[in-house]
Image (tube, rainbow, N blue to C red):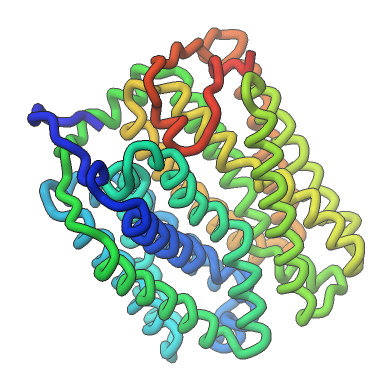
Length: 425
């Protein structure tokens, strides 16, 4: 995003002790973990929530759609609206709002109250994620920035692959209301940690809206990355939002679903590490592999997951593919626009969350009109559309080389290795 002219400032992290700085980093990471877990928690609890609040599983899917849509809008809006406000205060308010919203959901007696709470969660997720990405520089000495930023972003990844299954397990053992309350208390714990451990973090720049369309227009690689994100994430969440009814329809016992989702999460973490080690110089190939693995997993879920063992095998494959998505796509976006990393990242965050919402919405319509299994076929089809998009970009020269500066970049600060260009070569 385009910064206004401002005099150079010394990073507050420069004179801060590593121990205090890392404590603040962990508080922020806990906050983003709680936020992203909160956004996706209903995935594993749709059936019991729908039953308790007397709505269909498709309607219950709005609990994922609504915060995703709101987060897509709030990501740039909160970043701009925050202006010169202390970032510690903004982040604390956002994570506190999420905590309260989850506690409200835990005691809600009607579905409408839950949806209002989910709107508040969407505001929190979009704003917090956008602002937290670059805050490590302000908290720790410069030599620790790369690792600290990686830890903060690790909260997003951990929530995606572990938060949902753990929340589902809590819900299965103690009830879905307890699961929502637990995430709410986790958010309030992060709030307390940020208030106690974080220093005042005055913004070094003000941000304008004009940088967003500029980054999209000026960088072909960003445009291609945004389209890929839309297709892959929408396809994934079309099916994944309704994985519980799919599994139960295939004969998997309800009490085993949380364990299978945990298997998915562990496989996702493995996929993340594998992708991080292999994507250097192979971005295009990595995206093609992810697309094929995800599509195959969804198709297999629809036709072959007729028991616990086969379902576990499919979810391992699916988890490996999806776990590789965040690091691969984030690398693509940052590498495509090293001179406009904040603007490009904001667009990516918005599209990621919008795609979560659209996927959940499309899946909900399919569940109510067709069947739970239909969401797997629709998801696989959307993901496969990424292949011709990549091919078209390659033939038309949309995947342009990016020359990265010699000094540390945002990519390195996020703990991601440099990649020579977005062609994967």
